[in-house]
Length: 522
Image (cartoon, rainbow, N blue to C red; front, side, top):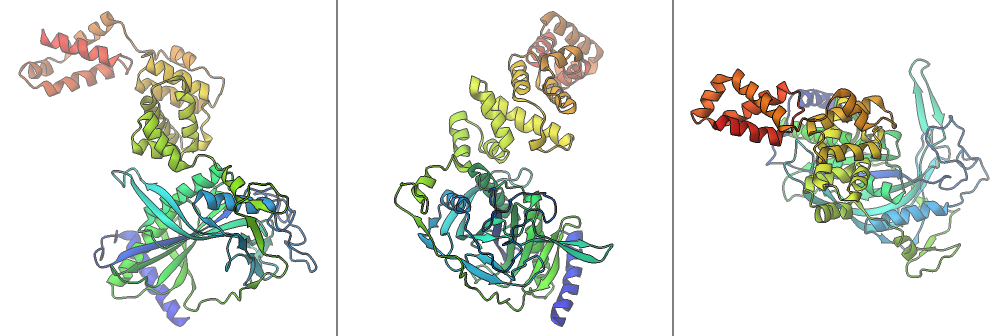
């Protein structure tokens, strides 16, 4: 323990260095990073895994607790069939082998928020194993082009959640809320085959999309419905895996990228300074943007796994499609799997001829994808629709600090706006202004045509009026005219820029460009 305290003091100094200076380049050739994830996903069911208590988020403290969840003596677990079905559907979507027989174990550890002193899980004979998740890695500003990546899944297991400890710093007391105790989870254990934080974040995002489409989990990391633990280590190329650190309960997709990237830099800095990496647990401090040591893991904790005596082996039918009250049919569950994100991206590229980058961004935001399919249902230009959603709508939402899920614009409003844009009633600059008005108003009854009419934003298409404006620009800029006449044709863009500014972006610029070019040639 003394060694660990000394190590933590040294690494706090390393954290300071990493926060102040980017050390990603230190010993890049000498050391390669290895990342593995463990993800807990809370299942979307009405009741808990082994009791009839309500399975909900944000309920009144200690109000969704059955006697079994509180470990009252004499109470027994009753397995929730819906939890098993959702676990199997998730496993099938991830190409896992569903095991015909799985068993439950008791994992012993002693926290105040675990009343029984053990957690029921499936460590030794899990629900499913040997799967793979395929995903695209693409972060605008970091990656120039997307690339494909996959990660193997070691196993998927059902288990119950623990309660939640609430720490009151003023009263200096810790309280326990058991609403979450017994909530149904699936734990997905991934092999250590990722290289950096961006790949890990892309995997988590893909997993969120998959479980949301399956209806297995809400995927809301901010609510704790999906919790990510990351194992990070460095090794010399070609060498076996080395000592790893674990980062617990990362609460956002970008947090996954930031935590892992920082931990890789921290370990590189420690090794470059002649230190060594000790096995321990850390957490991600999002405010300081660094990982912080929590506890020593030099000695592996003995969880004293033992078979759960109150639950028989779980048996499923791998071949028959016959629905049975007591036995779950895996083939029938396979038939319920909807189109998965990987297939959606492929369809967007093949059917609508979108760029892979646009397909990835649309699929990553289900609300935008819903907008896209709704707008393209009447043979509108898919590329222009995608550009409006990804370039303009996202820009407006980011400016207003709104998440896509909170976008107040209706499908009808977007349809009207894209139609005005395609019919050349407004240009793209005006379309963005209209989007800002719609977001600001948050009124589903607000008419796009009324906004354009009241603001006077309809573009000028009258050739005579455009000609007058072009003549005015030429008359006011004799120096630019001389440069153009002398062969410096690049100044033509300057003419168009002045024209746009003077007309407040309300011109048909394709027509204005032709008129301007004809006038300059005279």
